[in-house]
Length: 400
Image: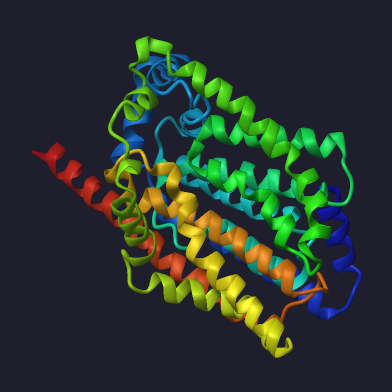
């Protein structure tokens, strides 16, 4: 965080373009918070959790939640916070959601500073906040997923700082962030395992010279995932094996039919909307198209092949939902790790194809961020519509 503060101070002392960038980033965060205040609502799923807090209190609510999903003891934390602040008021939930998004943006901006700065850092942080193509970005009951992603971004920041030298402080931050993220919501576990790949491929050195930094950066991932895995295994026996995860794991596995599994996974991640692959490829082109086109032919072809393979592999990080085919057909579930893994691809590409960390074209950044914000505004409105319908039905029912 000290690095981010120093970076902001340098911006305020330099020429007009970096100062303009700072104001553009402030406007971006303000737009995200404004969308949260305008459109984020709890819906019936969120109301169900809030009603538990109303009925049995905060402590009783946590106990009831833990009895059903002991592997996620932190999942109801933010909804409990909204209850404490507003006792069910929709404005309290929207405010907390907005604060989480703003914090997520700041942490993402700090996280990528070792490899991506300037306009590229702005675009990367915006993608981290929005997580294209996640359809459930603006649903109030997905606040725990946002919090979990925010913690993984903190782990990414620690891991990127371990690529040059081992520091117990950064290792500890990475381990704690990973464990807290998984204790909140474990869907990003495969993305967490992939974090060292950003170090391995996010530079222009050979793989042989990148291997040792990647292994150093993997220390938090190794310890964090192992410790949570032991905790997860222990929770399976709680409540007589009748908890949420124990029941899911007892069902037939989709891995027994791998072709059907992949058809569901890719169909949901990339083809629920035919525009999804086009949008994601366009974002990649805006981010790294110019430096790749400037490469010699041989390196240009290698770069395109690298990005094409990585793009095809992105949905595989949603295999954390390969518990049943219902989960694999749910775009809100599959889109969450897909959006985060696409973000990791974008950060890796920016670090790999921009040797100057301060690279990026301001005009291209304005166009891309504006397009992302307009697209996510439409998504926010679509997420608001079910709440509006539910609220209307309930109001009319009460009037009878």
